[in-house]
Amino acid sequence: MTFVSCSIPEQFVNPLFEVFDEGDFVLSSYRDVEESLTRVRIFLEDQSRAEEASLCLRSALALVGAEAPIETGELPDEDWRFSYRRHFKIDEIGSRLVIVPEWDVPAFNATASSRLPVVLDPGLAFGTGKHETTRACLEYIDELAQTASVPPSFLDMGCGSGILSIAAAKLGLSPVRGFDVDPEAVDAARENAGKNGVEVDFFRHALGRAAPDSPLAPADLVAANILGPLLIRFADEIVPCVGRWLIVSGILTELYPEVLAAYRARGLDELSRKTLGEWTTGLFARTDAPHKTTKF
Image (tube, rainbow, N blue to C red):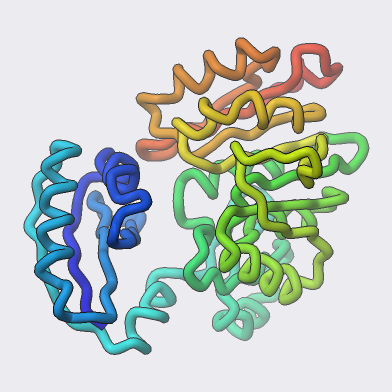
């Protein structure tokens, strides 16, 4: 497997992905929480396209105003498919959750921890709990689960690996549903739910493509961990699904005021926000909901 890659500051990652959207090459990224740069890569089965991919990446970097050296290399198929496992470790989140890679279950069991384990093998789907946006969402779900007098229902918009939905089910929320535009993510989420012994209705759906038979229905708590621009673009579709609370995430802090304004204009109050690294996650409630004064 041939790869073309570079390392860039986090602020350029989302613009770079937008440039590559629907292009000839598929971009992937990985950011170690201990590093300041994000590694972006194009994987190629055809080595002869490496130069073309390098030129495409160089042009895209220039378009978004980033500069970075580009390297080309080779990885054995077995290496790149499972390389993410080196960076995915047992991780405690919030007051009650712990994310456990499937291959580390024996090590976790040996600890006799009282925390609720969310067992995952994300594969190529987004969501391990390492990213600031996922972590903030998990913290909010845990906090809300502890304060709600009745277990709330939950809808996960952009479920990825299923991590938020599985955690919600483990924390007692019910019923739990989640969707993603990527069929591979939906398959991975279903497999992960099975590994955790929880019932979650995962299905394929894309915001912006609502039809008369849309599978979306309101839930007490909705989590939308998608990009900030998409949260703004699809606000009119997201807000009607919110029964009581909404968690919005995947937002670079500099864009958060625009997201805040969009949801305030549609009748939601901001209860609190969490800023981790360069990302801000917000918790909102309906202005007509009796829970709007809850503090977090």
